[in-house]
Length: 316
Ligand SMILES: NC(=O)c1ccc[n+]([C@@H]2O[C@H](COP(=O)([O-])OP(=O)(O)OC[C@H]3O[C@@H](n4cnc5c(N)ncnc54)[C@H](OP(=O)(O)O)[C@@H]3O)[C@@H](O)[C@H]2O)c1
Image (cartoon, rainbow, N blue to C red; front, side, top):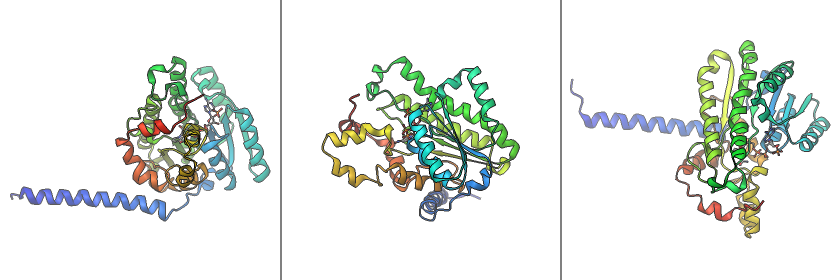
């Protein structure tokens, strides 16, 4: 039988359109008809370990889990903020909080890793949030040639190496219990090139591909482990003060107000939306909010960051 090439192309085009519409429908259903994943039933009396849990996105996640009655291990090297966050949780929720002050990049030393693993595995770690991360040194924004060798190594270590080490640490226990959640903070910068921060973009591309590969190696259907990677654009935290303070300095405070919760969301509003994308079969990852999902993550490949550069404040 000879199939007319035109008919073949029509069928192919129809299938592509159906696939596209199905993907869009899945995105719409996750954000507009969200189903909250039952983290508590995974954690039971175990712990959620959050790296960089003292502030920003990590702190929001800690508060969310505490509200659900989930015990916490917060690891961060910001001692003052870690104490404040722990105090806030202890005063408001009845969960156990283990606060550990440490520079996570020290895990690259096998002796430190072994001691840390021994200490952590005394607890049942049911949930891991690989969240801690840093951006390039300000001197190297849009100027990679001006970076320092220590700055480069440090960024790759916390953003990529620590993610792989922490995942390795929790996996054996989760596989044995046939249960667990592993979430990672990637970034929209890891989906495409980002001239402002080349190593940041590279380190986040690592996180996204690492997360998806681990998901394929240990699929939920066989292991019971739920995997998720977030790849948002800009959220208001201390990591993005170069934008907030730049907009303020350049007299764009009103713009700042109107952008709130839409294209430059507060950490509270972004997290509230993002957490609902976990465990809904959306395991290729998510931008975390509608704007990032539909626009930012497509636009990022065409992004000319000159305007962002003009609006930023890169003074130390
Ligand atoms: N904010 C955004 O727009 C955005 C967008 C996409 C992805 N992300 C990613 O989301 C994650 C969280 O970012 P965030 O905006 O919440 O940042 P944040 O407010 O700076 O919080 C990160 C926390 O991690 C801690 N930390 C950094 N390096 C560490 C280390 N070596 N050892 C232990 N703790 C360490 C920080 O301590 P210090 O305060 O002492 O540094 C801080 O408490 C990062 O991986 C980031 O790349 C953020």
